[in-house]
Image (cartoon, rainbow, N blue to C red; front, side, top):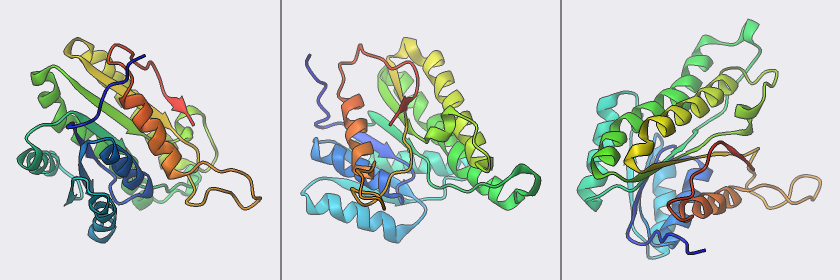
Length: 230
């Protein structure tokens, strides 16, 4: 089965300060894609962008809180000014915080919901008109296995991950006729090291990146129908 090439395509990736986003960006860049990494922490963004540039690939790093539609549109505009097109949007959940509902802090609730649900909505809201106008595009959400069950003390994070899956399903249903393909990856805890504390093979951020590349290079007529647990 012939794979889709990522060469020359442009990917905009949120949650760019996270290890997973950095690994996904590097993996896509090695496949020939041009990457715009967006995140809140400039130093971590620059480290991720530096790895891509050291591999002789192209990356733009944009620092943004993504706390308004105007911010999301500004990130999109900067990416389009640099690369002249947009093919792929990847929404990476930036952080976890939880707690039992009876004593969950409101501050943590708001921060998690903003980063893991409001931010993906804003970025999708900014990019979907571009994808619909050009009648093609791919949107991937990289969330968590917390979206596939109910776990005590997951708190706002668990609610946000369920909401993220619902958001992606709405995007899929509303945009099928515009040749917009959606993907959801739901990884467990991704470690930096290849083995866990017991010496067993562990899921790493690079494994998540491999899955992202595999999905994005499937023939365009193959469309996922739900989250993939990894």
